[in-house]
Image (cartoon, rainbow, N blue to C red):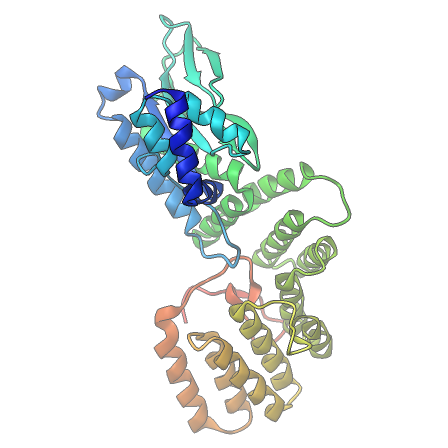
Length: 400
């Protein structure tokens, strides 16, 4: 089969809409190919083993609970129709040329495991779908290095080198580090969210996450508005809450909504902080920006809207507007029937209004819904419990 024939077949695929399908799939999928040095294979790390560890770690990172949509990364074993056809005909180069003419540049990543051996002076690594190559001069120490090269429509061509932490470092650790660096390159917000949550769960210092976030923010354009910067500033505000530094947290949440005036999570986090500091009227005013007008709220995300009405109900409870609070909690439960936190705060309100029997019923419902319990690191209400006294430190949610 020659390039002319492939072009004809590609045209047929286009006629059936399959080229469009290829383009759609490629926009959200990173195809991974792996090459492994022979001496590493001898230790049991064949290509498919490295591929499996890498993809498994990437999946773990990308499954971090978040209210933001994220791209996926999967193994090159699953290829689009056109790529499989070109590979079968040994005409990958012709396919790349055709895709370029149509404005399609498929994302791809090549993972190369290298042993830095003084007897080898150069390691040649494929770099991107346009056929370019890059040469790497190796050092004198016999240590492992993992090189990631590839292309992504958002990031362009990239080249990442990950070295072992020490001569005796576990090779699995090296592959997991490389997976994190790959996601950090392709979707920095998601990688940083994963890193922050992991440190918080282990009760570790979050400063290393803060350093990475600050670097990412500093590398962004200095425009007045920037949606990606807003997400990172919001995440930095969550770090402030983890450190019980509400002054810094408030400043970062404020910066987030200044960077993106439509960032509903930023307003909700400010309102959460207002309630925590007993500034209930301020919280209600902030929440109005998200939930009003009711026929066209700032967000269509039901989990976020449910959180807004839950915070509203807590503020109204503390102002002893129990009837209004009950309406807010009822609306929150309608928006997100699987919520457990709304029933916890609803139960608190019923206890405050001397309705202990109903309070027990709501708490029972909260326990029933605990099977759906999930933390969202970027959302304060879904990452911390609001205390009933503003002078108490925030407690991170670990269970119902």
